[in-house]
Length: 157
Image 1 (cartoon, rainbow, N blue to C red):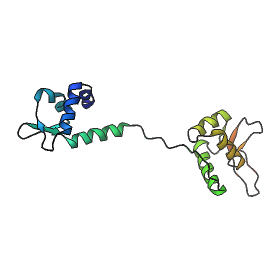
Image 2 (cartoon, helix red, strand yellow; image 1 turned 180 degrees about the vertical axis):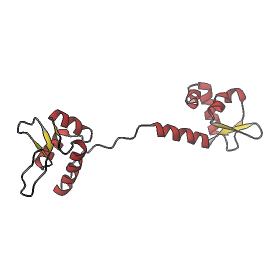
Image 3 (tube, rainbow, N blue to C red; image 1 turned 45 degrees about the vertical axis):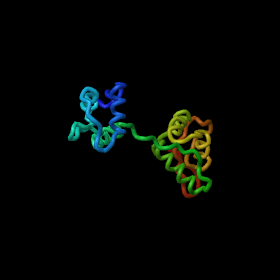
Image 4 (cartoon, rainbow, N blue to C red; image 1 turned 135 degrees about the horizontal axis):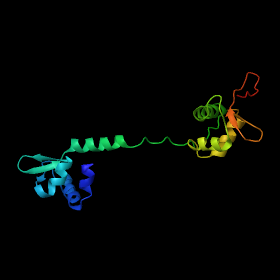
């Protein structure tokens, strides 16, 4: 946090650039200009009145900032596999993620849930019904996970 505060100061930002672009053996220290960077813990003092960027401290700050980021969202499914077996695996896996085994959901709720995982909601919803992964009321008022029995008929929860 102190590093970000230091970087909001134009002079400290310019000084950090000078130090970062300096040689491995550092640049001459300037106590007044280095004060904010020193308090942020991103520079280290070297013998002979020189300073350089503390690489380990800077790496630790970046690691800490990276850990605080929210997880990267999974990419959305943009295209269904053409091969029926692969498509059924993809659609079944998706159905397991969005609808509990004995749950019924309305079309708007199903659309909202699908929208978290796919780019073309109507197409995937239709494919799930057409391929027997989901069943629905004739009027489309509710959807549920389909369980195909041995004779191919659909079960209802």
